[in-house]
Length: 542
Ligand code: D5M
Ligand code: FE
Ligand code: ZN
Image (cartoon, rainbow, N blue to C red; front, side, top):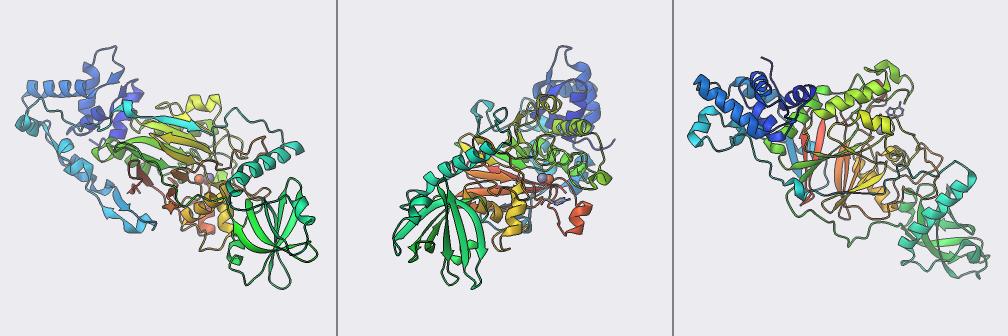
């Protein structure tokens, strides 16, 4: 009989109209012949049963065992030992280095954990009353999921000129309040009227950055009253920060007015930033969240096997503390997202892609709390903020009743806030900043830049499409405890002023395009965050 992993068991159960709790699935998977055990259970459960509980599995397999008197029928066989090629590797790091290089082997839950390994024979040794399978550590009542900043259904933008005016006003207003304690700023219009030699400060949007003939930098700031030019001299310490600037981000500058009051020479520069003294909140108990993104179901490169191993792992003892699953966009491959994309589509109909995604979602344990946001491959408007999926798509992606919210949104899990953003602007940050500050190999560093700017996608008119709204939903108003993005298909994490930044990799192997531009994706990894310590463990399934 082919190996029956928990995910396969869940699939069979759901196809037959049942739900199962995790312990029941684990128990079934631990049987020497899971398929036969499953059939037996389905035959014997009362007709009205909706959920297959661990208790009913236990009763049925134990009765069967006693009746047949077959002492080997529940003994572990090579079935599970053969899973060694399916073994996930795990790595735990405390620092910001790339976790992948720090991989360490973990034991295979299906082989060596006492609970799963406990067979019929063992049961007799330990007393038949002792539950087989493992106990979920968590109490579902302790779970707490709160959503903030979900703009689904709140879009007011019409694309008219006044929408641009209001979004920039709102952005400036809200980010100004983070900077105004640090500088004694004045509006652009009043700076012009001050005498030459005065100390001046201004808070504004970066309107333009250009180099001068003599190698200095001219940064033009804009507020609601006008614009004013600031000159950053090439030999000043702040010149290093100029290469971090993106158009339309909000900063503060202090300087000295030139004699004619037409320009100011910069003395200091400030970003809205994350206060250094801030400390992250943590959960009160040992509970974990799996943070993933970029599943890309429907692509020929979607790694179904890796996904199924992930789903199996979630059903096992090693994942017993994982109670939350966050998916940061690109559930499916979509249609017509990039030129020639159709040549690599496995499923060409977008709705069928979501149906297939839902089948894969079904394989993860039904008792996880799931939160998802859309990405640029998903069937929602491309311009950010992207509202959560429409009713029809929600009805397709209904497995385990996920919470579907906008990109970006903040989800608070037991007091730990996670800013979820798909990450399209990361391409721009990486393209525009020097490699040591942002690169595909260290995507978390590009995320640090967004935290520093307190905005997930500052630049209008570039690669990232932005929708003007009355309110700028992309401002990072409250500092999150965790910042979770995807999109660049590279795994990386680290801490920035006590904010854990995680870019979560993908479930799609290298596409032709990625090959042509030398992007080597980190596919088939699941970063797991302990919400009590904010430590990250990376599980590998590819
Ligand atoms: O994008 C995954 C990563 O690959 C992201 O960094 C953009 C980049 N990418 C992928 N395909 C293309 C094309 N055709 N043009 C430009 N950039 C691309 P994702 O959107 O998740 O597929
Ligand atoms: Fe993607
Ligand atoms: Zn993407």
